[in-house]
Image 1 (tube, rainbow, N blue to C red):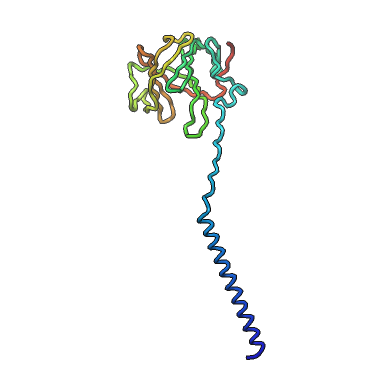
Image 2 (image 1 turned 30 degrees about the vertical axis):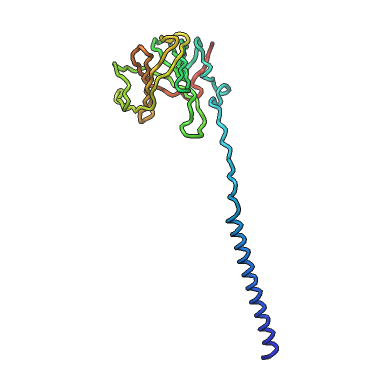
Length: 221
């Protein structure tokens, strides 16, 4: 064998040895890495802070009047129509509180305005201010059913019912204190229907009209 062939063969063997060494070194490093991954503790869970709830009033008090500041004797406008606040019923049921104001718009057809801070529909949703204008509907001796009922040809489905305590202020036509039964319903198109009965009286019913922010103006107190 010539000297050149010996040199070439030697270089080839050396290259193979180096490649094998690098391969085994890589394998050892991979095994060490896998062992470290297997024995290392799991990464700590980072607690993401919950989003801070938005004030239930939103821009109430700056962009428009806060309905929660309405008082008995106030003169207010609802969609531009003037009314006098004759009285108020402060109602409480299982930790939830709301106020119902009796309004006289001069037509002798009194209306109730309810103001309530309600929780969000889904977990984590901020509370919101719900303002409803109620218009009486003839019940003709009807009583609230525990299942679907039909009022003026519309199907309403029960959403809530119970008994609440109330305290009256001003002229409401009800005692200073007492208990109030209620049963709330909703139609497929979103319309609301509510039955109420102060203990010792007959059931009355009313449809609700949600009022958007800015619908109420407090003229005088």
